[in-house]
Length: 131
Image 1 (cartoon, rainbow, N blue to C red):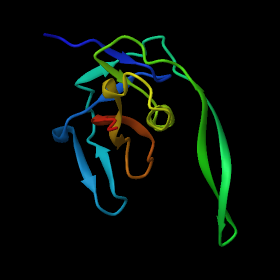
Image 2 (image 1 turned 30 degrees about the vertical axis):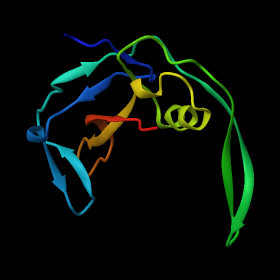
Image 3 (image 1 turned 90 degrees about the vertical axis):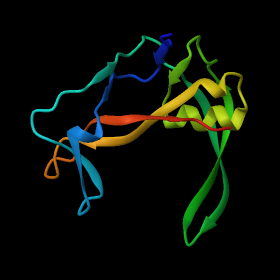
Image 4 (image 1 turned 120 degrees about the vertical axis):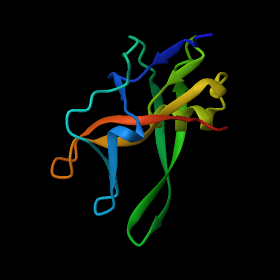
């Protein structure tokens, strides 16, 4: 049974395998091997999830402001078995305790073009957002 995946980020998600990358310890990043193509592309679904948030200043540590996220409004989770969202949306959804949290995922383990040009080109998979 194929699951319905909704990509609610503003861009396609390119999935690579561990065989297509190498881990460069000097930059602590997964680097794409030459001429590799994604094994899967999750297209942008046309759904963008937004959060209206405010940040409350709660402290200052050594001159650095420390804020707490205050969710004022959040778009509901759309239909789908797996809904890929931004880290900001995932954090706000957890904070707000919205329905559908168990269907949320974020991208996992970014893959970069090269050591010399550390531009993200994809990921190795998805992370399930835990409650």
